[in-house]
Image 1 (cartoon, rainbow, N blue to C red):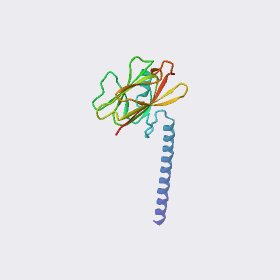
Image 2: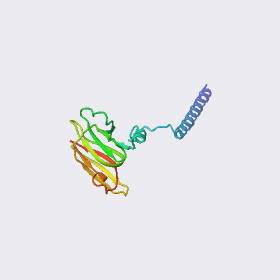
Image 3: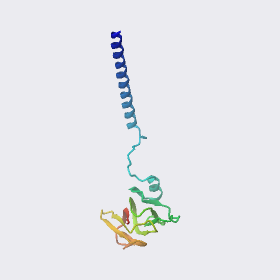
Image 4: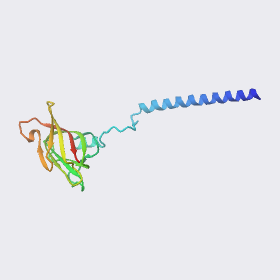
Length: 176
């Protein structure tokens, strides 16, 4: 009987080892297949802007990343109570491009070419106590522009037709 127990235990150990090896190999093959799959997604936040491709195609606005407190908006709809709005005018588009400010602090990294005017409006509860934009020229001259709240701020060709066109790179609001 003792010999049978040792034999049974050895057999059970071999079965466990074989099953574990098969599971590891199957898992490794699945991981490789998933890594090769273009549909594989990461569970880590990449801070990319949702819907950015459609906004770029329709409005020529490249939204890169942000904290979610400044979002692409619809200029034909009044912002909801408690929201501020930043409107951007470009030489390429007749209608303004709007961004809704959802909190007292916010950040949005983007690229909007040929900007000449930025209008930052705040409302109760949103819009912060100060705002700024970062713009650059084709020559690579980058400038931080303090935005006058509840007023229009001219940049690039909006200041002088002889100025170089500017690309808007960042919008930021700061609040209490």
